[in-house]
Amino acid sequence: MSKRSGILSLWAVVVVVVATACGAPAPASVAAPATPSSSVALAASPTPSASPSPTASPTATPIPTATPSPTPVPTPEPWKTYTSKRYKYSIKYPPDWVVTPGSAGHADQFDDYQSHYVTVFRDTVSTFVDLNGTVSQEIALMKSHYKAKLLTNKLVHVGAYSGKILTFTATDNGRKFYVQIVIIKRGAVGYFIDMWSDPGTEGADRKLFLRIYNSFKPQF
Image (cartoon, rainbow, N blue to C red):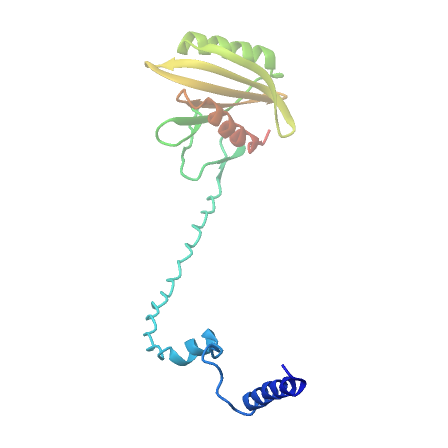
């Protein structure tokens, strides 16, 4: 190839390149850039039909729970007071008990109509009451008349006065009893406070008798 022909060849190449740059159709092998899938998706997706909102379940209004009113505790009825002119003393007793005043040689009686009996009796001697001798006589009488068994023999105080408290199991007309006897004395005067009750509730009966005889006020 001559030097000129080489220039012509080079020029031909330049002309082709320039012609291509000035708008000649691109070779068929060149592909157009793909449209971003996200843009296609946004353009092509049909507008979704509005789904009906689920109907909200109505909120149930809670029914207020009524607070029960506390049951008022009944006020205990105060005990009654009995004053004996015959035997010169006063004593308190349960409000539902009944009093049978004594007569000459008979003690005052307090009872609940069924299972508790309290008697109060006053006696005098010419000199001074022998407490220990009186207690011994009382024990002998209970054993001979009521087949009694002595359970306790203790010192006791009733207000400013001292004495003895005796407890027995006893039988009267075939019925068994729990017996408590308080004997107090001052000078020539002595008092007997007895409580007879059915067996089986000895603990409660001791508390009941304690409250009764602690309210006792003798008038020596």
